[in-house]
Image 1: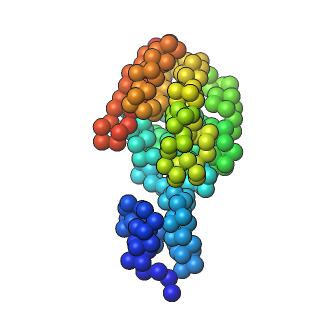
Image 2: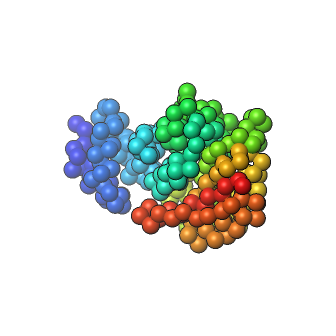
Image 3: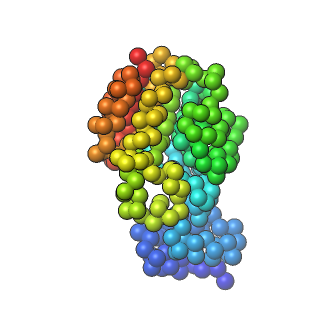
Length: 256
């Protein structure tokens, strides 16, 4: 006999899940068999991220497939998507760097009919997952930052979203186990001050952006001023957008 809703809630709460009722409802609605339900509850109680247990995450109103070992798209990153859409032109070329599951690119493409979408990530597992999500709406490339992108995109990108890793190396060990244990280090570790990848993206972005095109990168509150400075040093017109509700900070750099 499969566990009841109350039994699932009790198991999850005992494992430290703060939103046990909500998680129980999602697990029960996703499991297809009693055996799968039991296995899903056990995996979540063992600390596997809920999205990896379910196999998907909700992001910008879409259901995004998330495979085990792939970075889970955060709700706060929806703010980056909204900022990008506020800047968009009709049928732009959209690039999603450090794409992970491809959530940002898919959300942008869904809101911009006719957009040309390219997504890229250095992690093969992320690329496989992104291919599932991007599907027929765009192309996924495997490689380091701009390296695998088609050269024909140079000077044509209207929206360049890069959800780069920005956790300082010395602070990765302080992350919650769900991230530290179950998500790839390459998606978390941003180098000594957390801004190594951001600086690399900012430095190369002007060669890829169309005139008036914009680069958008998420960062933390305490890194925001240095991130804006990095974009300015790269020759971009930079500003910071903040969502207090989502605790999100997005640096926006526009090619003059």
